[in-house]
Amino acid sequence: MEGKDGGSWQRSPGGLVTALEPLMSVNDGAWVGWPGIADREFEPFENEGAWLVPVSLSEQDVADYYEGFSNDTLWPLYHDVIAQPSYHREWWESYVEVNRRFAEAAASVAEDLGTVWVQDYQLQLVPAMLRELRPDLTIGFFNHIPFPAYGIYSQLPWRRQIVQGLLGADVIGFQRNADAGNFARAVRRLFGYSAKGSVVEVPATDTDGRPIVRTVIARHFPISIDASAYERLAADPAVQERAREIRRELGNPKTVMLGVDRLDYTKGIGHRIKAFGELLEEGRLTAEDAILIQVASPSRERVETYRALRDEIELAVGRINGDYGSIGHAAISYLHHSYPRPEMVALFLAADVMLVTALRDGMNLVAKEYVASRVDDDGVLILSEFAGAADELKSALLINPHDIDGMKDAILIAMAMPKRERTARMRALRRRVLEHDVERWSSSFLSVLARTRPAGAPALET
Ligand code: GDG
Image: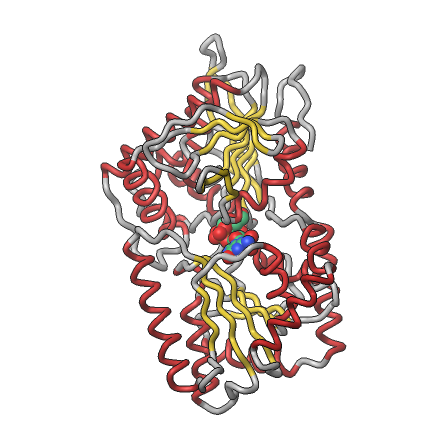
């Protein structure tokens, strides 16, 4: 949900809110969520056309359920154990309890025969809990992060409970086809249910206690962005002037490279900085030719792994700037801040090369935002094949971020790419992002969900 800051409500900067904002404003829906402040109770209220229903979390819940189980167990596990997941039984107990609180809140506000769409890995037990409380509801679930291969997923001590929780939904959405495949495999391995194509058959009982088979759809629905909003901002003369000003402030280098990420170990920021540093060290690049702007927005700063990551990145940036920068000209312009969206779009317009080098990423909206902002059909996107966006954005320069030499070559290829090729690639990328925007994502999910609804259930506007 939103965070309360000095008396007014603010949108939080993550991908989820960004993605759902357009949908929430056209629907008369209730958004059940945590307001972002611990130990405070808020009454439901209206904001920008949406009815917000706050669920409260105590400091202890935040530590155990959110920072603990969600961000220090599930997040690293689901991102292929790039960092070591921590397994603590008290975190799990808190996860169950908080999921129950969300399920109860949703059960109390949903209309008869209504639709509930549960978002993301922090709430994987909600679908089954909600089905138990409100069997009349149609329930969707969308997982914004990857679903790992069974060999990794099976580490989770509560692997059966999580899959069972998800199977309470009528439709389970994933970012990539591979994620849906991993989930189907987990269902087969853990429960022996049939999971063929996108159809999972779950044994259940009807209201008279007779055995039936419930059908659950599990398939991919790649998320996207409000592409036309980015286009509009990018066409704004003030934003374009700001883009030119950014380049001037940097001393008009030949090439501006850009990375924009939450400061998270999944994003491959260290790998990117290493590649850039080696190119400088080998003299294949000079700090006069190319500058790397790295926006690293603050994230999960109370989790130890994130604190260690920040130290590691800032040490690497400091070394490179010390070795290759000069007075008034850094090799890497490192910004540990969040910026307003127009400033982000100005940065996208100012950047000749955009670096998305995630080691694992559900989708990566930044890649799509860069493309949508390039109304001039220029700019080169370097994109990790480990980001979900790589399934769609095939005209990007696709890289394996673990292959540092490969990444260095891609950077030089991007810098030297002729204008004709840049335009051809960017046009193809833009067609994809503009046609497959967030509105299409939500309406395609909701139309599949609607097909599973019982006759007589009220229609949902998408
Ligand atoms: C999760 C999944 C999936 C970042 N810094 C600023 C800022 N941002 C915005 C970006 C983008 C969003 O935050 C980040 O979205 P991503 O998709 O890149 O990554 P996650 O936050 O990890 O999101 C991811 C996503 O959910 C959606 O399903 O794609 O794979 O991990 O929109 O622009 N926005 C502003 N200032 C910043 O400083 N205004």
